[in-house]
Length: 154
Length: 198
Image 1 (cartoon, helix red, strand yellow):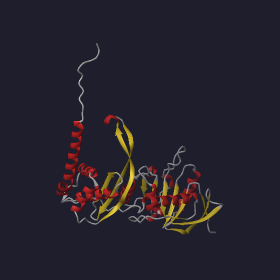
Image 2: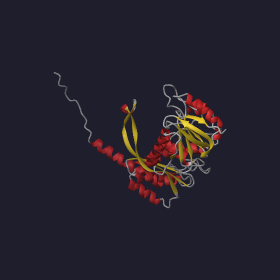
Image 3: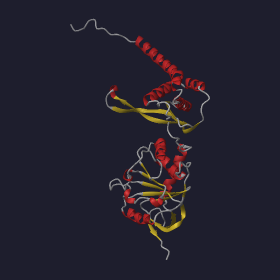
């Protein structure tokens, strides 16, 4: 990392990688196109699809177990100045993994990091939150409340 | 920002399978040269050895690096395969030796246990040449009768060590000797006799 500004903490990087992984390819293409011209990069790991074993916990907080396998695409690339971008996403879309890796590397640029986060990540995150809220609302609207009026014992 | 990491195999699946097949063939036919599809040279490490590591190492195989090899190589391998670095040769599944003259005694590496002799170290040794050097006669499984082999670059004490290694069967270490694009396998079952010129 350069001495100029502190590197992004792991938590921040995980956060923006999660937002990027949930976005769809068209949104990522637009976001990346807006940041052109890109620095020259070389692929450390060409986009490849593979399987990961998903781990889950019983009841959300109990013993861990192997839930099942999921197809994941991943890519890693490196700019000439040493910034390493990695991209992981569910599914088989190799272009998506490459775009996530590219955006991850671009977002690590110390000087423009804050501006890029506001320009790229914030809109994606807002869209995802809105979609999640709308889905939760729609689900809640279908909820049925049961009231016991009379017990049929006598 | 990390230091520049060298790329791995250009065709991960295809090349890894070819390299594995070459290693398998080399160990099954000790002393015979096998063509080794090479990865690109990585920071001073011969392409043949780099390819073997990328094909064979994973997160369950700690790798011991002979001292002058830089930490950058351990990072490179860890990025591509997840293989951790072994500080102690006894813990290593693979040992990378770029200067065979300075190879530690074979007893310092893991030789496996009587119940699990396969948990031993496999030495990946970069030798300068597979001709010249000491004249040797190899015997054992995979060799019909005897085979004359020449290996240049190994210290004379290596072959004395090897005799002890061979005698410890089923435990012991195995070695893969890499010279450029040629690979020679030396499994622990091979008995080596030095032919002294009289």
